[in-house]
Image (cartoon, rainbow, N blue to C red; front, side, top):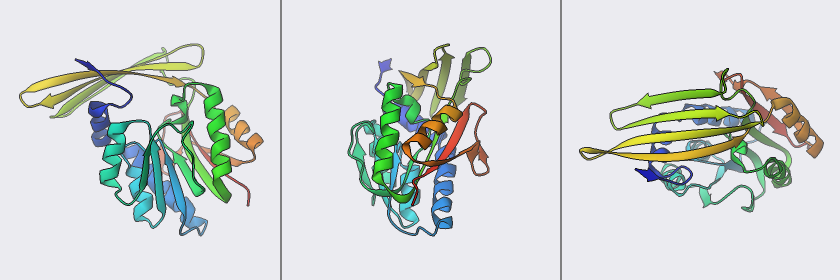
Length: 241
C-alpha cells in the first residue's frame, strides 16, 4: 500500500478517466459565456486545472489557455491533453496569475485551500488579473457536503481500477475525505490512499465577499443544464467594465 500526495498518479488516473463529466460541462459553459459576451480571443486561466479537460476545451475554442495545478501527475496529463496551453505546477495561492479575460476554478478548487483567508486572497488576486469585463466562474461546496448524517461513502469499480471515498463533515465547517484507490498492475492490484481536507463555504456569504471586492455576482445550481448537488453552488462573477 502507498500513501501518495495530493492527487498522486493513481488517483489522478481515476479522476481523469472516471470523473471528467463535471469539468467537461463546465468548460462548455465557460466557452458559451465568453461567446455570448462577444469575447472571441484572449487568455483564460484554469485554476486547479487537473488533467486539463477545461484547458484543452478553451484552447480548441481559440483562446489562449493557461493552467495551474499543485499535482505533478495531473499536470503531466494536462500537458498531453492540451499541448498548446501554458501549464504550471504550483499553488494558486502564490503562483503569479497573468492578465486574462476569464478564469475558472472547477471541482471545489477553492475549498481545498488550507485556510479561508487563502480563499479570500485568491479572489482578490483573480480580480486583479482580470481585464475590465472579465469573468470568474467557479464552484464551491457548502455545509451539508457530508450528507444528512455527516458521513458519506461512495465507490466506483471498473476493470482496471476501483475507488472508495468516505467523507466526514465536522460541525466547524470542514470536511475530511479518505480516498482509497485500487489500480491493476499486471496480475496484481496496487492500493493507494490519500486524505483530503476542505473548508466548506455557504454560497450567500461567499457571493457577498465577491461583491465587496468589486465583482458583480450570480449564483447558480449548476453549469447550465448540468446540475450539481444542493450543497454545491456555481458562482459567475464579472469584473465591471
